Length: 260
Image 1 (cartoon, rainbow, N blue to C red):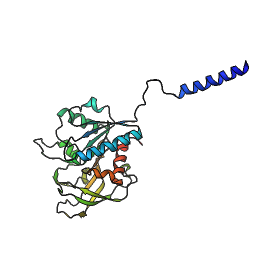
Image 2 (cartoon, rainbow, N blue to C red; image 1 turned 45 degrees about the vertical axis):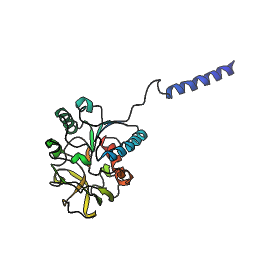
Image 3 (cartoon, rainbow, N blue to C red; image 1 turned 60 degrees about the vertical axis):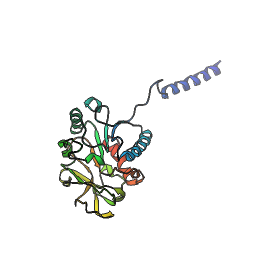
Image 4 (cartoon, rainbow, N blue to C red; image 1 turned 30 degrees about the vertical axis):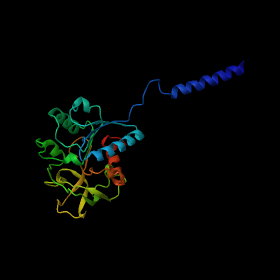
């Protein structure tokens, strides 16, 4: 009898342990954080965006966060943005935004309600497709206006300047980008932002006359509450074969979302 009671007690104890450690039926594990990515729809940047989605999907699965995608600004308002800890502007330009979307995004950034990572086409600032330049966004990126680009592409060396910045953790002090357009602007954003990396125009291959001298390509506007970083590179899908670029993108996501 005592032996039976002993085994009954052991079984009961084990079942209790299983119950304690087992998730409640129907309960799903909450993501560590949520990301919304505003991805430019079918365009010259579609291959880059497609490659980014594959890479982001894998990263999100491995690290317990989620990514939702939008292709326009129609859904953007304060309530919508409150669901996300990070906003990725995946080659979407700073125009075709409604006034409601602009206001909500500005508050999201200025009040530090979430982080922001912008790529490439996000700095296409000026008058395009009948839309005026978004002045606030220009100031956000350092008071710049888009000027020109290398239409035939060029290989170049990028020099890391802010080696201690979290976005550049484990990134070499110099790295090569095989194929980019290297946008130029009416002026360098440097006086108004913190430059993290710049391109060495003397390394352009083939050489090009489309240059701007001081040429930042990664920077952050630390005058605003939101953690934010603009990464110029973002045209060609082969960037996801570039170890330095992938590290920067990964670092930017976790830093921007305020996660270790």
